[in-house]
Amino acid sequence: MGKDGKSKDAGKGKGKQAGGGGEEGASKGKGKGGAKADGLGTCTYVKARHILCEKQGKINEAYKKLQDGWLSNGDKVPPAEFAKLAGEYSECPSGKKGGDLGWFPRGKMAGPFQEVAFATPPGVTSAPFKSTHGYHIILCEGRKN
Image (cartoon, rainbow, N blue to C red; front, side):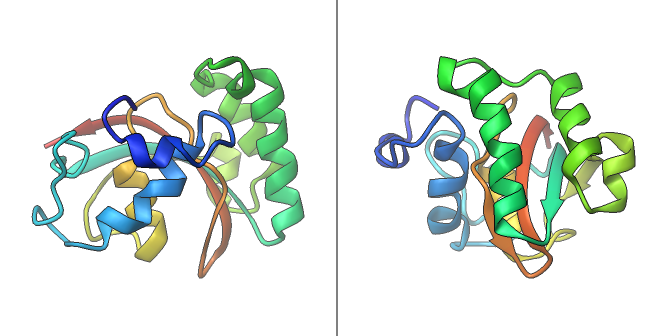
């Protein structure tokens, strides 16, 4: 969170630093070529939960609940609470498991989803973003090589 100053300028809640700046630097490389000075680009695996909605209005409603409960106060969203919202809002089959995607490697997820997942620091919730599957919010739970 602290070293990526340009994405903090996005100004809309704590989750913005992950979703707002993720696509710019992440497009530099698949694999290990896109490593940043903050180390976020160096991990090989990410453990994440997500909420997927077809409509932007629905994902924004879910994100507002995250903001009202935690993000606007500067707090991290507890994984159990994120899981409850995923069960309520997510249209992905993973929603039944609280949005849990487990550990996945670089190259498994497509386009913007991978970029945001690998750019989001552990414990941080991304801002809503669009992929070919719809609109997502990601909670990064961990990273490893």
